[in-house]
Image (cartoon, rainbow, N blue to C red; front, side):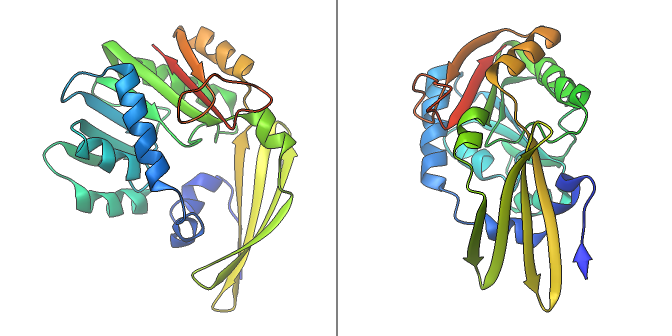
Amino acid sequence: MTNNTTTWFTSWFDTPFYHILYKDRNDREAHAFMDTLTNYLNLPENGKILDLACGKGRHSRYLNKIGYDVTGVDLSENSIKFAKQFENHRLKFEKHDMSKPYHKQFDAVFNLFTSFGYFEDDADNLKTIEAIKQNLNEFGFGVIDFMNSEYVINNLVLEETKVVDGIEFHLKRFVEDQYVVKDITFTVDEKVYHFQERVRAFTLAEFEALFEQAEVYLLDVFGDYKLNKFSPKSSERLIMIFK
């Protein structure tokens, strides 16, 4: 049995295997980034943050822990179901499509860890930025933490095998039609699974064009989680702050 997906993110993110493959993500680095980012933005005490495409809520939970009123939203029903066990009066999770405005406004909207550029239609990527704009209050900031596409493409590991929890994941990466693609194949209980991740390889210039269309203003661009200056050749991240 082979599992193929069309809209890849609606199915792959909802499987337990996605979370197994990426279970070694660095929480310490993520927490330090949240500290640095919130301090830089000088968000108000008890400020309200929307974590857009929050997954299982690792950033949301930490932001709540350090004093913010956080709403985490994601399209993955299983991720939201998992995250809801951590809810409190200032931490809520809800299933939501990030290309549509949420029904509240916030001091900041964070879209973290390359959770952008999934859509096949560029119009939906523009709608996401427009939705972020609508979700910001008068003094609010939008933040998109994206891969630096130029750096990623130039340093692409074409083939790799990772063994996690006894599952052997075979990964193949390539660039196709302006997308960075990762093919993921593995076998569990004699069933062969195949998933694919496709992320639009947006450059800073392409983001700037989207921001102009959405009538938002790019304020700062950084190249890593310590908010150092962005370099197209050497920076691993593309972190954009706008309003």
